[in-house]
Image 1 (cartoon, helix red, strand yellow):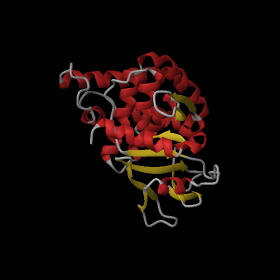
Image 2 (cartoon, rainbow, N blue to C red):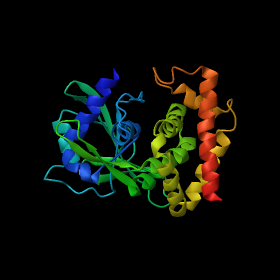
Image 3 (spheres, one colour):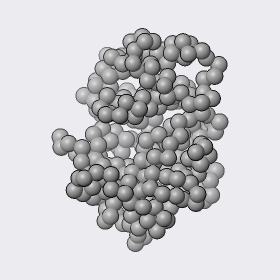
Length: 274
């Protein structure tokens, strides 16, 4: 499946739930894509594409215009698939939207010290509650998708919130591939959105005050993962390079570049946290 198919599936999903977009925050791998396309206006950027679509919602999602999210998605032809034996079970919506395959999951914030669980957030709609998701939910920006029809306004986490969340989540992943993607997103945002870097560092400064314990854990995670070019973090980022990206660099050059991006970030963070 080509990148155009992934994009059309993603945009078509947003159109189906457009009445809920004021209540939804887009998460996961589509966030960097939206940064590149609508924050730095680089539509040619080689991004990681996926048919997985993560949508973040509050623990109690109000019904909008008389139809639940579950009704909208199932009426659009998607099937709700049970992905766990929990009660309530984790549900993923899968299927074909106008010829494009999608898989949609809903996530919500894990409150307190309870373990990751599944919460019924609306009739028929179950969301997985995850630690650190509050960082994404509480720190958002609005993006105007004016180049699709109809134009849409969406919420995404701020770049600094997205980076902080990914830097906290990746060591907790059971799936090494997902950990590698988390690290690649951090690298790609910092290396691509260079004009946003001062704003990102300032934003991290603010988030340090808001989440001091988590911020220290983030710095520790980065510091132990990126020490030299042979450390696992560099190799994990390298493994996620999309076809056509960084073609002007040999593998050793790219490894050094990856390490340099994270060491520069760590230098800024040490200044921020000092």
